[in-house]
Amino acid sequence: MLAARGIEAEHVIGELVNVGFSRIGRLYDGRGNLQHPQKLPDHVEATIASVKTLKTNVVSGDGHQEETREVKLWDKMSALNTLAKHFGLVTDKHDVTLHATEELLTILNRRKEQNRARNAE
Image 1 (cartoon, rainbow, N blue to C red):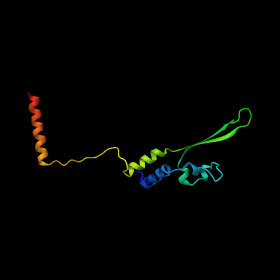
Image 2 (image 1 turned 30 degrees about the horizontal axis):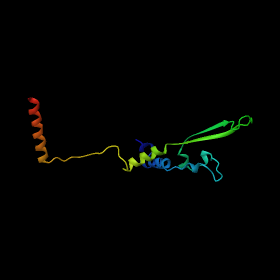
Image 3 (image 1 turned 120 degrees about the vertical axis):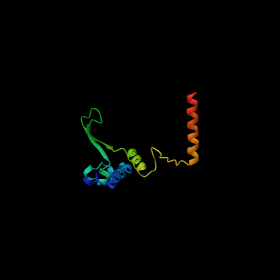
Image 4 (image 1 turned 180 degrees about the horizontal axis):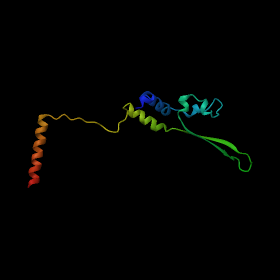
C-alpha cells in the first residue's frame, strides 16, 4: 500500500536515521544564529518537529521586546529504538520452537494420564 504511494521502506528508514542521528548544532550557522528551516538541508529540516517564535521582554521595564525562537526536534530516542528493533539489536519477544521427540511425547502423555488419575480420585 505504501509502495503504491511512492513510499518505500528505504524512505522510512532514512527518515528514522535523520532523526536518530540528528545534531541540534546543524540548525545554526557559523555565527551561532538559528537558520531558517527552509535554508537547512532536507535531512536536517526533517528532524524539526516545530518552531515557535515568541516576543518577550527579557529585560524588565526597558520597553523593548526581543524575539525568541523555541525549536523542538522529533524524539531521537524513539527513532533510535525503532531502528534498533528493525536491525534486531533489541527484541520485544522471543520465538521458541520446540521439536518434540517420541521420548518426550511419551513422558508428557504419561504425566497427563497420572494427572487425570489423580483428579479422578
